[in-house]
Image (cartoon, rainbow, N blue to C red):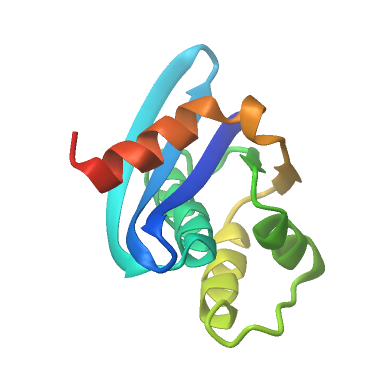
Length: 129
């Protein structure tokens, strides 16, 4: 099972945004930072999950995925398969489509303090460091 931690961050809301993806694969760690342009923090959180799924499709296509996010909004939308917000609807659809290509996809909410690596990577994407 692949453990995937995602986080989105914005400098301002909306503002310059980034996504962080931290992956644990049987003792091997992968770290990714993606600048996202100007968007809200919630949009960045959705984009972080999309980016993580794209990475997993390329590198772990047949694995079981266990995602963790500190965004209740994203986790609830994915678990319920629904969001009222029209901005998030295409992002949720992208997540659902990409997640369907895996044998098992789980997503779980975690407190921010349990997601420091992805947070650091998302903030790095904003600052360009």
